[in-house]
Image (tube, rainbow over all chains, first blue to last red; front, top):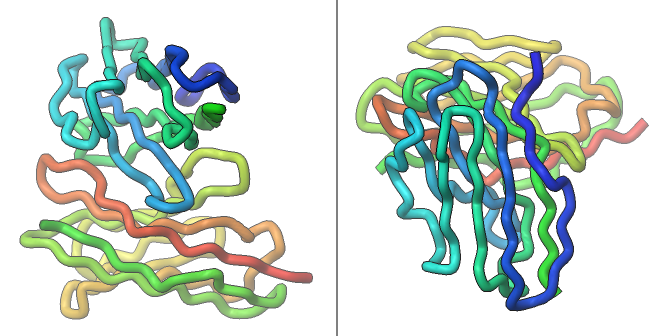
Length: 114
Length: 111
């Protein structure tokens, strides 16, 4: 079975540009999570969805960040406008049972904002 | 709120040495406990888990026992290999919350 798929794997952009990260969860999973990982702050939960509905977005750093899940097989995380401090690895994860069980992580998108 | 505390790294060992990475947690009820591993350049992978007190999770030679009396879930391996070099994350989930991760412990194994 395919795992969680993220694209792109690497993204380099200039400050002020819009960035869109994409995620395809594992088929049959009803929860989807977006995380950000940096050396300074470690692993941070940004937002999670259950049955395509955003449940908790308290980890989204500011209004420049937005996430959508239009259907069960696709989610996006958008940053507009991007800033150098947004440089990080962004992970998507999916799971069953409303997130109360194991989460399966994608390979991540390494974002560099110049 | 729930929290997870891991020993700070890096932990540096020689091949075939015994490994312990300490993890303690704070929770109001009866969480499920997890160890995830992150190899360089990759996402996190579930290594093992335990869902109730005294359960032992095991995988790839790693073990951890859910100790409710000491609120701990220490990770152990009897003989580490160079290929075990990675960052290890302890985590818990309770009720209908999301995973709470520790800060991670880097393990470096030299030949």
